[in-house]
Image (cartoon, rainbow, N blue to C red; front, side, top):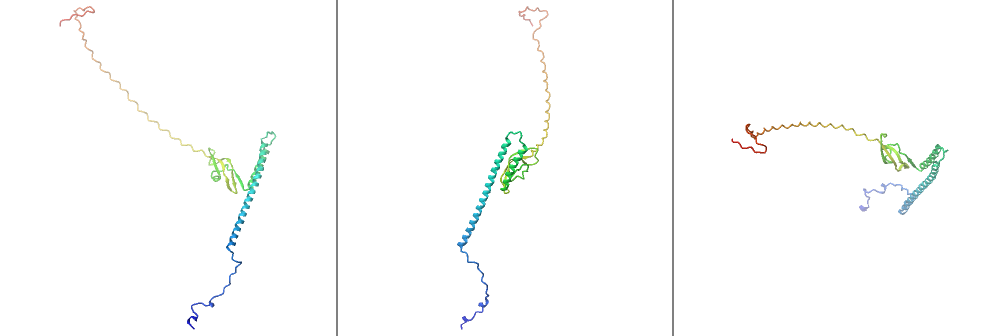
Length: 232
């Protein structure tokens, strides 16, 4: 026997292996084509369900609109009756009829997940996310920024705002500016210096009389005649 026929002590023999149960395979292996077909089928079913839900929602919307149209017609009828000149019309009864129609319309909307909100009287922080101010009104009657008037109500659908309210916001009147201190009176202007009287000019000495006085013993010539020269 050659050395190659002898068992190798370093190699394990069959006696070293233990039997294990073969895992059970439920069904045959799915082919890629069959798996893709299954995915497409599930996607088709999901799309069909979504289309059905959309159709149902559209049907509910249409039903809501139709009922609202009927109620609006009833409201118009009540308004026309209120405009008729009847002395015997009970105002409280007319108000009750109109309020009844209004409440029915709001109930229809709430049944469809639509809510109408009036923000009047709420603070600016409370309506920050669902109201648009169209005008501001400043007055001392307001202690804070609040909704003073509502031009259009806000509309919510399933709790989310779908139409913002149009409001007039009220705000406190601005504080008056502090009164300015009166400006100091200007210092009085210095009194003007008294005007100096001009000194009187000295009188000129009298001019000497160059006319020669006649001698008392000399006779005066008659008027118009030049006196005769005298010897000096």
